[in-house]
Amino acid sequence: MPSGFSGGDTAFVLISAALVMLMTPGLAFFYGGMVRVKSALNMLIMSFIALGIVTVLWVLYGYSLSFGTDSFHGLIGNLHMFGMRNIGMNELSGTIPVFAFAAFQLMFAVITPALISGAIADRAKFSAWALFLALWVTIVYFPVAHWVFYFNGGQGGWLGDRMHVLDFAGGTAVHLNAGMAGLALAFVLGKRVGFKKDPMRPHSLPLVMLGSGLLWFGWFGFNAGSALAANGLAGIAFMNTQIATAAAMIGWLAYEKIRHGSFTTLGAASGAVTGLVAITPACAFISPLGSIGLGLFSGALCAWAVSLKYRFGFDDSLDVVGVHAVGGATGALLIGLLSTGHAGSPYAGLFYGGGFTQLGRQALGVAVVGAYSFVLAYIIGKAIDKTMGFRVSEDVEVAGIDQAEHAESAYDFSAVGAALSKALVSVGAPAEDEATEADSADAGTKVEA
Image (cartoon, rainbow, N blue to C red; front, side):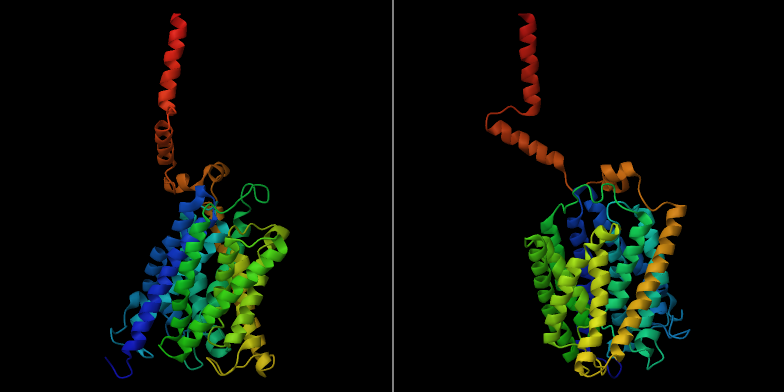
C-alpha cells in the first residue's frame, strides 16, 4: 500500500459502511410495521429495491457525478470515473482506499430515496416508484451530494466546500432532501382512501421497534463513520449520536404525554429516529450538552410537526415530512447556534461567539436543498403520473396493494385458521367441516322421518 495508508481507518470505514447498509433493512421493518397489514410487503420492498437500483447507478455514474472532479462551479462532478474506471485498487482518499470511501458513500445514496417511500405508503405502483427512485437519485441526490460532501481545497461542492455550509453526515443532503421529496410526492399522489376518516394504525408495533433499533445501531456507522478515520472526531460523533437520540426520545414522549395523555411505543420509536435525524448534520460540531438540548428540542418539535398534515391536508403516510424534513432542517440550523468552533469545524455558532454568520450559511443550505428537492421531485413525480400513472386504483388500494402488486401477503392467515380448527376439535367442539357434515346428516334424518 502507498504511503499514508491506514489499515485501522480502512477497517473502521468498511465496518461503518456495513452498518449503514443495515439501516436500509432496518428502515424497511420500521416502515413495514407502521402500515396496515395489507400493505406490509409493499412497504418492505420499496426500501429493499433501493439496494438494487442505486447500487447499479452508483457504479455506472453516481460516484463519478457525486465525487468526481468538479466540472461546473461546484454543481456537479465529471464522468471520468464512469463505471468506476480509472480508479486504482490501492489509490487513496485520505488514509483509506478510494473503493472503501465509494462503498461507504454508496450506502448513503441507497437509504436516502428509501426514506421517501414512507410518504406515499399504501397507494403507489411499484413500477412507478422504481422509476421515480432511479430518476430522483440521478437528478437530485447525486448533484446535492456533490454540493455538500465533495471537498477539494475550496474548489469542490458549492455549499460545503465554497460556502462553508456544515453538514457532517447528511442532515441536508440526506434527510431534508428526502423529506421534501416525500412532501412533493404526497401532493402528486393525493390522499389515501379514508384519510382522516378510517383508523390507519400500525399493524405491528414490534416490527416498528425492531426497525428503530436497527436504525439506531446502524446510525453509529452513519455518523461516526463520516469521520473517515478511527479518531477523536469519530468518537465525539458517536457519543453525540447516542446522547441526542436518547434526549429526543424523551422529548417526544414528554410532548406526547402532555398533548395526548399517554406514552406510546410508536412515540418512543419515532422520537429516537427524530434524534438520529437531527444530530446527523451536527454530531461532530457540538458539545455533549448541546446534544442534549438539540435532542430534547427536536423530539418535541417533530412530535408537533407530524400533526401538520392534518391541519394542511396533505397525506404524508408515515410522517416523513415531520421527522426527516423538519428534523433534518432543525439539526442543520442548530449548528448555527451550537457549533463550538473547536470540534470538527473552526466556524463557531451564535452561542459560542460566532455571531449570525454560520446560522446564515446553514439557512442558505436548508433553503437551497429543500427547494431544489421539492421542485424536482414534484416535476419527476408528475411526469410519471401523467405517463404511466403513479397511483394504484381505488379498488386495489382498498383491497390491499400487496396482492395486486406482488401477488403475496405478509402473513398466512389460512394457517391460523387451520390451527384454530384443530384447537376446537381438541376441546370437543366440531371443526367447521365436521360441523357441516353433522348438520347435513341431521337434516337427512329429519327428512326420512
